[in-house]
Amino acid sequence: MITTARLPVQANTMNSNRANKQLAKNTLLKVVLLGDGGVGKSCIMNRYVSDKFDNYSYHTIGVEFLNKDIIVGEQTYTLQIWDTAGQERFRSLRTPFYRGSDICLLTFSFDDKESFDHLTTWIKEFLYYADVGDQKNFPFVIVGNKVDLEHERRQVTTERAAAWCNENNLQYVETSAKEATNIGLAFEKAVSLWVEMDKKAEKRFKGETVSLKTEEREVHSMQCC
Image 1: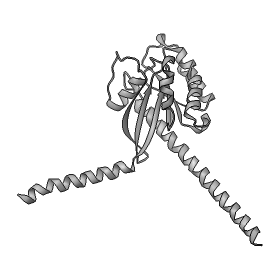
Image 2: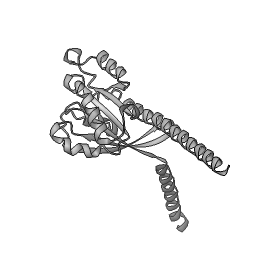
Image 3: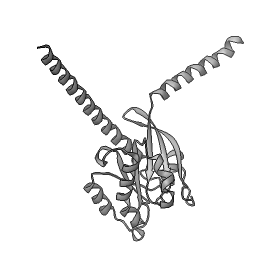
Image 4: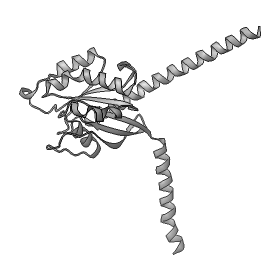
């Protein structure tokens, strides 16, 4: 009976150790959802994390966040997803949370032309408060939500949104939180873009390090001679 009692404890301990090791390997990425109020940011987050949709959800006040694990290229990433309030009156509440962000999903709604027109303003606000440099070196993904709407209700066409994203060299995904269309794809594309940019940044850093060491050797050689 003693042996029988110990076996589950040992098994649980081993499973716990494996889980802890796996968790330790995860890369934590902070993901911020930005866009005008009412475009469906909260619905996108909740659909992705818990696969639920609330047609009567209220506007976010301030910020909310949820976690979700994702596997991209055999690597596990823990996404800390921040849903921010889109109304101007909540600007002072949301902007402090931009710092430390790794990814930004800029969201507009197909039935709201202004939400699309405001994307440039959102990018500028994020770059200023997040202090991440320029747009080219940060993983932005444009998310056109409510693609399930009938064409007569749309104020933004796919062609216009895609053309704008191409002009600005931005990734683009069309989603529907209501029908769970491309929700996972949006986050997968965002993480893949982060991985790609991270590798480029690492190569640049190694190149600068090698260059610096070469210059140091040259200076040392000149001093010795």
